Image (tube, rainbow, N blue to C red; front, top):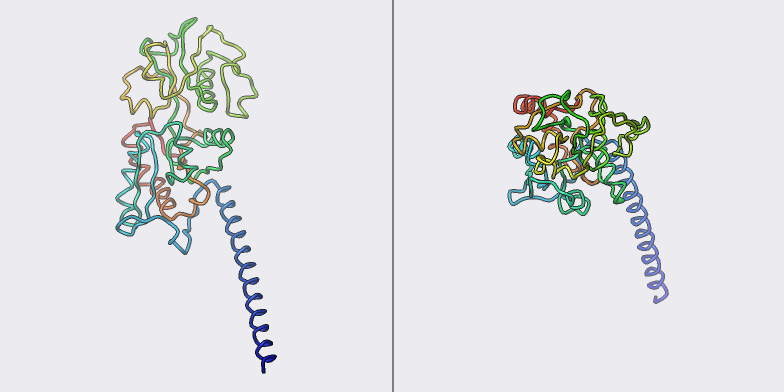
Length: 304
């Protein structure tokens, strides 16, 4: 009798162990598959058009809406978020901006999960930030372009730029390339041919400086506050809009085929967040494109 009971107990223990092994194996396989799907979505550079079937993993507000938090620059970024927020609320999504001024910590906060998205930069700049810091932030969708532009309080046209003038340009490599490139398009300088492939440059990339121009490389956020120190300054149009800049516009980069669309930036796993997907769709909608065209009159252009 005792032997029979012991045999049954052994049989049950063996069955349980086998079940645990099978469950563990399936779980590992499912986790691996999820990681592969997330990596594939991140590589696509745009949020998946289908949300996950299980929405329980996402944060919710007191009304039960899926909640996403972010940081966006004031103009036009937060204004565009504000424009689409009511539409998203109707769909069950709440978008909360914790700040309307991006700074050097914004990408770090996104990487650390303190916020779910940010909206203030273009992809070449994000790639530079990722490479420098070892991060894996990705583009959830292109939204708009802010053509980089040369302004002056001293001159009213590019022809007036004189020998030895001081020109302020952004000091990050991608925006500095854009600034130097429009100066090259005006025939003021010549850049090394190799920088056109990398989309990165600095003053050392200048091979010919016909008017002996002096360049001040400075954080883009500091250019307009110190504009009186320069004969010409080059800055993104969103910063000009935020500052209600009245300086003379001398010349600007072309919007056609422009690779510098401002993007919604997220961690790879948030590409499947249904609120992020809905946000990108709303910002890229025909309704929002019309709003951009009418409100900003060419200073901001919908991404293609």
